[in-house]
Image (cartoon, rainbow, N blue to C red):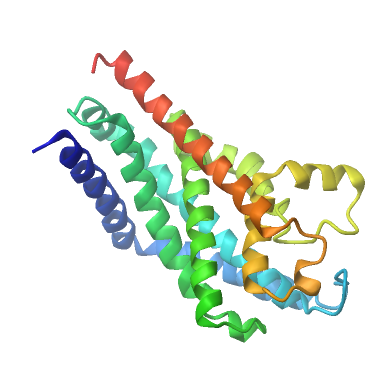
Length: 265
């Protein structure tokens, strides 16, 4: 088998392993789907009367729905990369690092598996968009799925970098609370930047997920309107989100290579 074929085989095997492991743990499937939908129902009902979007009338349930989909992508990315901590504790990760395959294929396989899981769950909820008042067409669905893949892959790569350095799941959950959840909250998923204090708008502007969220809203509303008022343009949003995802992937590969070198691989 050629080196390229061996690398592809290793990546596919790791991706498949992530999917099989996830599907066997039904509580993870339940939690990753039900919690965001519960948030959507509660917040959509509670904040409907006080929501005043820029540029027109928009029900809060409709505004928050894309943010709910992104929340599912984030939660699934987090849960999928927790397996890194378990793999290290069980010795599987050390065995993978000394295997005669490129470290990039190991990282790619883990990230691809997490991305597939996030996309699968995100699409299931996304197809319910008409129930929230968001019309879908074949072109919108294709474009939205493309943006979801970019967001899911970027979040999984970021979660990989964080989980790689964690020694316990408790530590990972602490990082999730102080870093990953604010990343979502400041992305424009929960509230728009318009009307927020200046310091908060500044934080939202440097949040890379803000641009993923903006791209997602713009493909859902190609004609514009209240849902996209004040958001960055689609080309800029895609470029920033892509750059963030590539940077996170490169950082993950470097971590894997450094640890493999220390292990004498």
